[in-house]
Length: 126
Image (cartoon, rainbow, N blue to C red; front, top):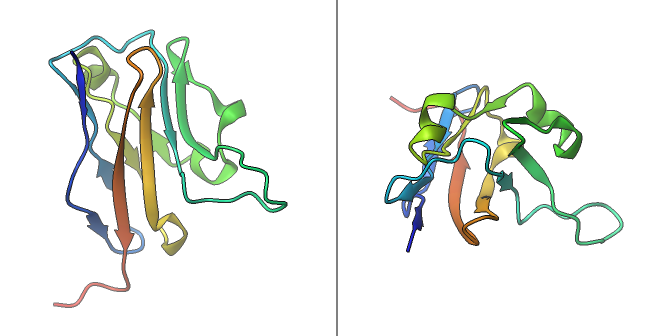
């Protein structure tokens, strides 16, 4: 069985940092052409419907921006190289306090999901 490996430790960043949220399939698995969904399970849409807030959606071998939250379209990416090996880690540029929270990585074709916690703190202390 393929497992999805995230990070048990939170990823800690300062505002303005670029981060990589780790997520990979073990053993190696070619994810090119498969669907990868990164979402924020804690975000609630105003109005209270339980809509999924997508941070990054990859399908049909490209980013599906129609599904994605506006704020993440310019800032997120997956590595083409990585996808071939089942590395679906999400890179987010220029994080802000709004990015604080849980990120969920889901691979529908494997029916596997894992979560990574992102902690965006104040300015770094020396």
